[in-house]
Image (cartoon, rainbow, N blue to C red):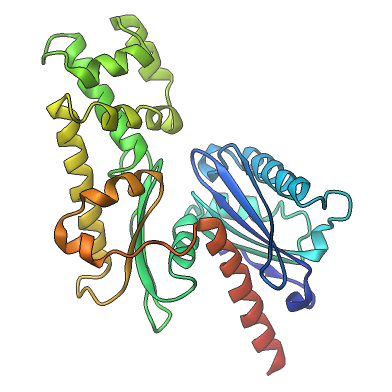
Length: 307
């Protein structure tokens, strides 16, 4: 999506992979031969949080990777291929606005963070993933090149099992306990300690919070699981939502499956035996997959120009 290819891409010196989501950005910097030079991290670069803001965080993460590799002074945009897997790319208006600000990379390839997560998890090969972090999404790549996604509808109506989804439900429990609709358990009290222990404070926090803020409540669900049955129920619901996505992606259960993302890693040991036996550990993360994305496009471009 939003791809622009210029020049002799296979001879580019640097290969960059970007994973941009609602909580943070991770950049991977490699040489053409695949050697890792550096990594950098910065704030969120999901397109729904603003195009300019996304570029600011991506450049900051790239600057940190270049500094780690001691390449800040000699780096030029035109010498580098960049693959970006960003949350929000499904929105065509956001995607095109973001791509229009490409500063001049030798190869520029833009796709969803779900697809780069899939490429990273299966090293560019066919397979299925469910990625659960701040949000959630599932994607599958078939042997014939077809791809399909499920979920990923976004905050606040979708992203089942994700950190923000868990956080919203934790807040609902805290609110219900605040006004006496249910007893105040360990989860409600943990939320109060973060967001405020009185009606006005809790309401103000809830009204001002966005996706990232609600996702910050998700760890409280895991921390209180052994002391609060409502937290345990939330975790069981999250696992069920993950398995529904996995089944929708590959109902015939023919492809390798990986559960990815920060929340996904915490929930992986809780999968039912059928899915626990099927899942494989991801080979790499979304930034690794974003480099694969750039290399795939470069190879295709080279093949087309060689015909």
